[in-house]
Length: 341
Image (cartoon, helix red, strand yellow):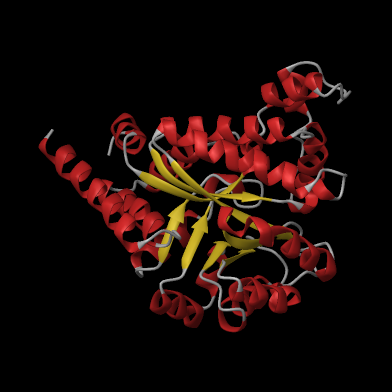
């Protein structure tokens, strides 16, 4: 399919985004604005200077840049502005539903209260409905911090449980396997929260970490997770259980020039619930439609394959079956309209 045609098709395709870090949507212009507002000297004064700091080649070097940038997020209004800017951009790309990761420990560890973070984000979600987009929050634990830190964070979150749909696990995976947080995840499940976990691409012990997440911790989704194709038994388990695999193809270009596209297509062909997302788009320079298009262009995806990726995103989302059916019917109507044109 011609590049322009597939771009138009993707731009107007209803979709959900299930793997997006709100802190990873901090665009250079907003970073500069917040630095000025909060009287913080970040050592940069132009968008170009900010972009030049995005010098990373692997997960640890990326995280060093990522966490340093968060110092400009100080007030409830800052978190509101950050989330609302993302929701407005996502709505313009025909994202209809978002499950938005946030990292409270990255903020409470530098003196920002949990209530400041979550209240700002929640306000943005409420106001974002005016853009015809609904959203929910997924609270991630930083796996390179202690179990006790994560336990305290869960306790801080419980008074706001109605604002949180699930919990996740992110940050540096090396020597921090999912099993480290198994008891914590069970506590979160007991509180009625959904479970997901990052199993990042091409990390040490990738398959073992996916096995822990699926077979022991019984997560409902794995984030990234495309290394699962190296183990056919795990793929079969994921298909049988309808596990969501929230791939972010171009976001992994630093470690995989082909964006793990072959793995995504293999999973799609086997009926796995893989979907496309944007991860940390301000840093990797690609929001969700850009990632769909990059994958479609490089691997010559059909409209049907692209639409199935979008359907998968709704099917593994943490919304009611009734709402899923509404969004899936919206995709079917869009497909039918496209075929008539």
